[in-house]
Length: 235
Ligand SMILES: Nc1ncnc2c1ncn2[C@@H]1O[C@H](COP(=O)(O)OP(=O)(O)OP(=O)(O)O)[C@@H](O)[C@H]1O
Ligand SMILES: [Mg+2]
Image 1 (cartoon, rainbow, N blue to C red):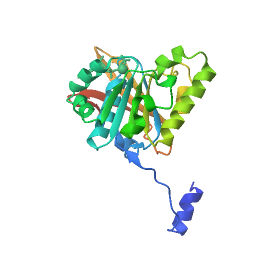
Image 2: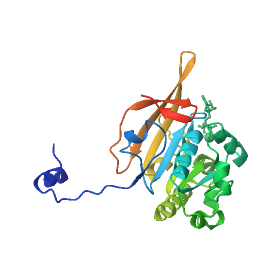
Image 3: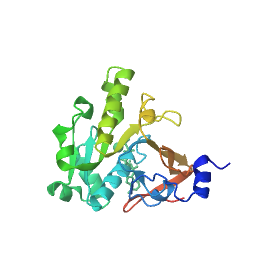
Image 4: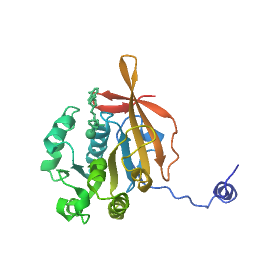
């Protein structure tokens, strides 16, 4: 079936289509599954079980931003900044060099405590990509589900108003539960699910784009591998 906009454009080539600006994740093999990249200023949930590569995925994405001249922030509630610097350097990503230039910052703080962001320089740095690792820990400390929903919505909205692309890391226990409270996936614009399944003596790692607003997504489950330069989508 041809939808209205397609038939309009066939008859009238002057019909305009909105094409959002996209940013590259830098993960080889991923951007071409999502029309060239993540919609700039959108919010994504990076969901997966433990050790599935959520942190490495997000570090890669910020590293890509830094290579394009952007400023980026990694908010960590789990690992220390020192651990993350070392993890990243293992893949050749020297975040410390960008910290010295004032283009990058690790923040060890609870972001939901204060959503005006002044305390960690989002505005001063003109940050355009931010990671929060992880949102799951926050779900456990916020009093109730509706209060968490409100605070998360406020956070996502404030970052969107600043046109900052946001990656929220979330623990998923199984296929059906992408987050601890079951609300996080509804608030964000996109969900990427990382998995590691036993396959004989090896683990099979996969990546699936569960949703991505404004984007025609590839709906398959793709293999993902760790490599010298981080991670890559291989099939
Ligand atoms: N070079 C590598 N080759 C193979 N596997 C690797 C490599 N580097 C890391 N890993 C695997 O990735 C895991 C760490 O990835 P990462 O920290 O991104 O996962 P995570 O989903 O954030 O985990 P957590 O739930 O603990 O935060 C390691 O436990 C290891 O299994
Ligand atoms: Mg992690």
